[in-house]
Length: 528
Image (cartoon, rainbow, N blue to C red; front, side):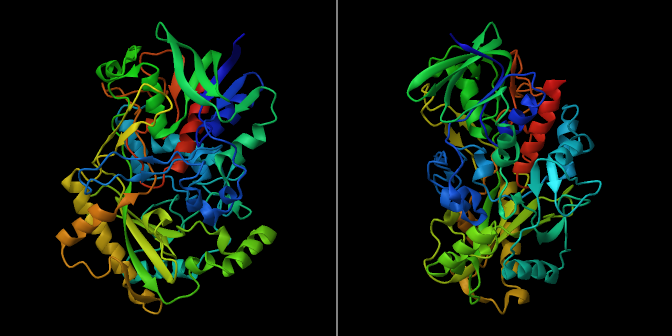
């Protein structure tokens, strides 16, 4: 006999964990949440500085792009969290909401209820801001947001370097203004990662009306007469089907949500027919409009022996690991990307459009190619509102096969122009007088790049994702929209998408906080 649930949530990631908590809170709804990955008990998940050690492990989908024609035909690595908490369990824990302009733009595109003033209460509802309680922040929410226990001295030097170049200091990128340079707020609690699994799912896990199933990979959503009736998933080698009474909520992320929709017969009809998938609803926008932030870094060798590179090498790593395990203090509480900034690339930009991340260490190719010796510091610049857009398509009708992901990075002149501008500023920051006492020489590139063509070639050869894929199931009213402003899938009853894929456009900044906000707002809409 098939089990019945009021709500079935696909994906226990940044959005899914929020939904599981909120929808089960009143005790009146039976809720099932399905996660294709395992539990999040690994120590490296909880230690903030170790996030890159989770890449290409069982906690990572380990995706890659198709060959990127504008990036020397490189196949770029795309990490995504495959565990309870999803990517909030493997990310760098930077808490950035984005620009007020982002949400007002969403609203102007016809998405009623998504202006900045209307989403701010949901940011605040989610938040327990340890240090700030004002009109922009609140305390008492599930998600712990704080200033790091430990900040490497090089990160303070970076902030001074920005002021040396004439940029203003900003103590709160999520407050009155986003522009400026400063230290990032992080989703930590007592020196450990505060993922959505820790913040939302675990506190709800003992509720009798909430069922959590890990290692459960969804095959498809069952649809009859344009109405969802259930979900088929696989666990321990067996196929399981559950019946849904109220709604299925798809929260599998910007790559997997469109894949599951297409496997279920929702998407571009011609593409589905190529894979012999019966078309349940022709929605050509499924998997389209893919957006991301692409970063290119200026990396320097450093004479300063107190960088995070030293903390990661034997024998001192043993000392700092014990310090962390005993007291939750020291360099292991760093999130690596400790500081950053937001600027306008030109006066005609309506708001900030370039972001910088600073790491007091080498961070080469996601950390895989860091030098085994020495110390360094890294400064990456990225375009916040890229005009290059890609797609997610099916590689196969087999749910076990990864989707085909083409980000189409750097396909517009505008993105390249602003990427070059960001690189030049990152280099100036690294060469500033503030770093003079800490800088020994160039590391990557090995020497100054003297013209825009050389910078362009360097960016195309070395730039990597900064892990913010969005917008593949965008909300809206045009013929490429996948969901409406209530996040209900157009033309299909009892089905919503709630994750970063519904963003009409990527937000200006790290995307974890906006994804949690979307899930908080969606929970209210569903319960009402």
